[in-house]
Amino acid sequence: MENIQFEDFAKLDIRIGTIKTAEKVEDADRLFVFKVDVGEENERQIISGVAEYFSEPEDLVGKQVPVLMNLEPRRIRGIESQGMILYVSDEEGLTTLEPGREMISGSVVK
Image (tube, rainbow, N blue to C red):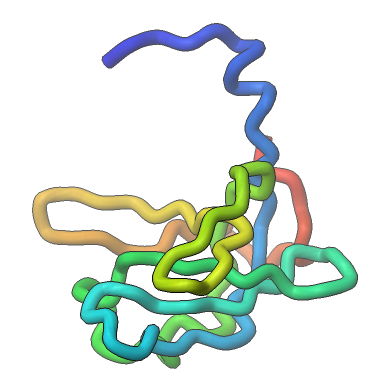
């Protein structure tokens, strides 16, 4: 693994978001589209290729997750993704990474 400078890490804006809606992307086996409250006026729309790890997208609604806020928006299957939800994985699969207690949406991850 390559080391990075602290200044590079400091560029990341990671905040806690609350998943408000989660749906499968039509005609895409791996993609979910989320609406996430990150403490801004409007919810962020985020696309994640995690469908193989969660049986129903609705099971993720209400979860609080870290969101990379300052990732350049990109279109996936014609849908704009406005950030990235961070997950944790091991040899058994992938799951959400959640704070130890309920946090205010938009709280900064340090």
